[in-house]
Image (tube, rainbow, N blue to C red; front, side, top):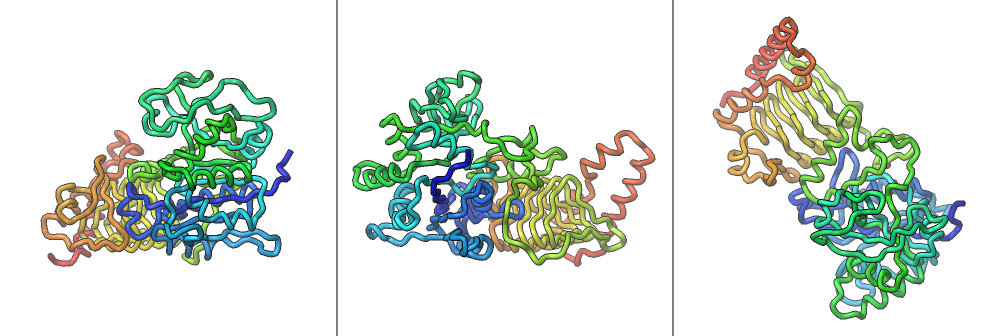
Length: 471
């Protein structure tokens, strides 16, 4: 039976995202592009697909691009009383900006008063996943909980990286996926395994369902309590746990139409550069770990006027191709090779250029003969002909590029890439001539095919040399 209660959805989108620097140097974390979307689009799409069309998005940190994206993309039928409203910090209850996720809602209490909801769904805006929140709300109602926390199963050895939910093992009749929370522990060294999966535990997803009156009461109390961090997970949920009123909703019971066995219950926190990169790589395997092509539960974003992607020959008939990759509208691969990468709108890859194992955002230009390897390139970066990114870590560091512990090279929005010297051009030429892995696997030990490929590579190198400007 579908819920007939009035539901207000609140999206917490004020995060600064320090661990995603430099991608968050000029924008809030929920506004960071992801495979042609914005991170906030996943939360908003899940709510809209769940039938919840009264949504407020609480923003604070460098929110201009986020506010603009929401206003231009997320338009509901106002005639039916639906909306997605971006709401900045307004100092309605004091002279402070948002002091934490709970305080953000407390300071925006007028939104709750105006909407008069029975149920409030609170979600984060920086995770990649699909979820039907209506199923969670029904579980919340049927369990009799005052607060429900969505939880995803994780391997036991990752307990020290998450907020861990320990539960009473008893099933709640009629409440699918619900268990009473016995303890909520932040990043413990160890935790008991689940009764049905001793090698797993339940980690908080940062998504919550509350009875509206209970949440208001908890927020009012938190606002006058000493020593609180005004945090939803750290303060509000423990409040309900201590009152024996908090239940967990097991995400593994959530059923999305047309989900595959491989991507069912996929959830990734993209709060670090490494996890952000890994989430992109999850998209491009032949059988993707996360399937963007599920039409029954679409992820919505702003429409584009860019033309279809195009793959054409470059100078001297150099081949333009993309292998094991996702390319968005407006991408032009002109005589270059893209491999195992994600290219967003209007990226250009020139003659003989190589893009490998990388994420390129809107309007990145990769010049002729340039090589990009294991890199994340933010919007509007122009990579000169013959330059390299991610090929020589010492060179990248010397030019001021960010490099992660795992060796990813990250360029910020519009970052300037210096013109290459002769040594770097030689490095790029050698890297561009390497055989793509997909072709190497295809030809195997076929000597005739190998000779053909060798001629193609020679032609690519010749084309690069013909278009590179003199040093």
